[in-house]
Image (cartoon, rainbow, N blue to C red; front, side, top):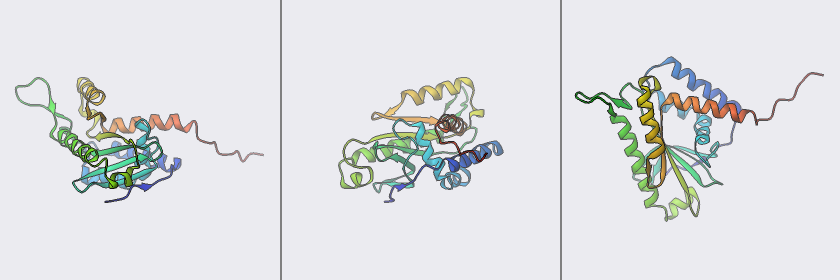
Length: 216
């Protein structure tokens, strides 16, 4: 099993990687999980860790692992966490195409949830099953520490431009109300992810030390 690696918050690199994410979203209307999304985040470890600011208790994560083997049964695309808070987030990347989130079905007035969304949600269900099933093992303690450990799930999928206002309302309701065995599961488009991280950056950058003036 892969180890969760330590990572130290680097504000300048977070800013650079967030700019790259925004540029990627501006350059392409559709994103492939294999060819666009996975390579981008694997080359953007600081931004991956910074996604922890969207989850209570994770903050900029100080531990991360891509393709984290969940006790020999499943592989999580990304796990980030805060070792002192004992809070972790498992992240599933899906593609960003017009039908990734919702799709029209003949004879129905409202769209149905997309196959990719349901696949991603199913992945999270399997991961949390494995986490809970191994909670009292030595392997679990070695990776996540002793005592109670909090887990969140984040499913990233689709583009906001492909959604109507009503679609966004449905997705927001699903994100706020659906849990897996008390674990909160957040579903976001990549555009929403970039916008949320930008807001987090604007807020946190106010607390960063300012460079000293060189004026005499």
